[in-house]
Image 1 (cartoon, helix red, strand yellow):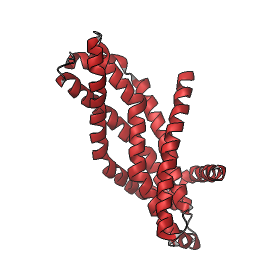
Image 2 (spheres, rainbow, N blue to C red; image 1 turned 90 degrees about the vertical axis):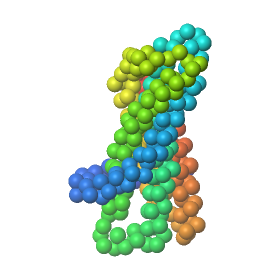
Image 3 (cartoon, helix red, strand yellow; image 1 turned 30 degrees about the vertical axis):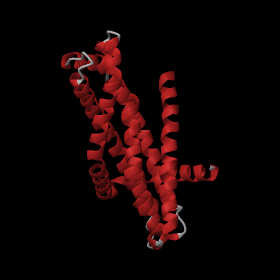
Image 4 (cartoon, helix red, strand yellow; image 1 turned 135 degrees about the vertical axis):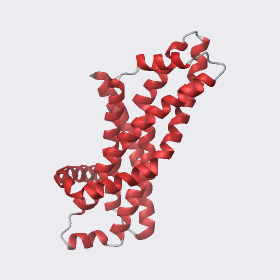
Length: 246
């Protein structure tokens, strides 16, 4: 475990050092960004709408029973901003993008394509890792913003249509506006950037250390997904504690 952590940290530092070459890799970054967004946007919308709807189903009747329907929008808005949108979108990215990154780089490693790049004096970190890290650090915050908006709309639709909850459109939107400000939105965006960096670097590292042919690629993908989910949840706790402290 400590060896893996050290290798991941070294790879992260090497990737940060290669950011100076990002303008020259702009085409690859845009290609990766388009692929990530195209693969995740529809599923992100579906998940976010139903997450907001589930929150409304759970919260709105309870608030109505206690005569405090005026905070339903605020509760759903804060939950989406602070936790659900960043964490759920990170897990979605892990399953759809992180696993693909590991499989792609792992295949290149197993079939000696990375060795060929080094033979041609092409830095694999600059050519393979850095564009993917930059793209995922742009894609995930954008997906989180999209998820927040769709989740709020899902909560609105279910709250208003649920006959057991006396919530109006005006009351929901007023509560959402008064309870959620730019600070809460920025908190979710900040978390998503950290999650994206962790997911990207873990996925790339696991691909680069792949051994053993097709079976080794499968093992690397499994390790990448499991380690990335664990990292996201651990980082979420740490970041939440730091944000509450400050």
